[in-house]
Image (cartoon, rainbow, N blue to C red):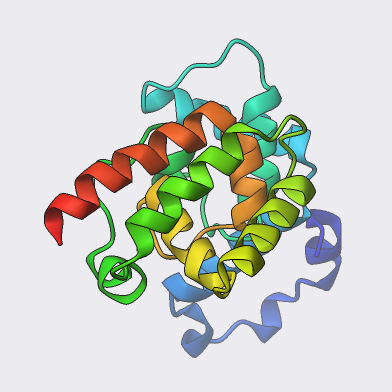
Length: 192
């Protein structure tokens, strides 16, 4: 409801003691609904101070608008853009342990190393092209696409959950994606 609709609907006689309970989960849900409904440019003005508070700066707002587009359906409060989407602003330093145990198999490092070579050759580095290349590569190797998708997500975000992998890869860019996969290959291989 808009503020005007709330004012029109308000009736002091309907207020009761039991209605005065503070529900944090309900508040976060309501806030997430407001975030989803806001235009990305409006959200940019609200999110930017949180991003800058954490020390992240950008030459223009283009990158941050892309991040907002991917994250806005997944956050409850504005701070979540930075805390849950930290991987958009810095390389992961560690990786979700459950994700490693679940998705990093014996052949994962070898297959990801080969896939990096495939990524390097992509000229039109967009989500649809990245997805097509990944699925084609998986078919060639006779593996499931998920055997690539999950370890790549883990490598580039440090997490098991994120917005769509191909969209995240596009926003991060080719160089960052390759660097992060190579870093994960070095770090995760050592841990296992």
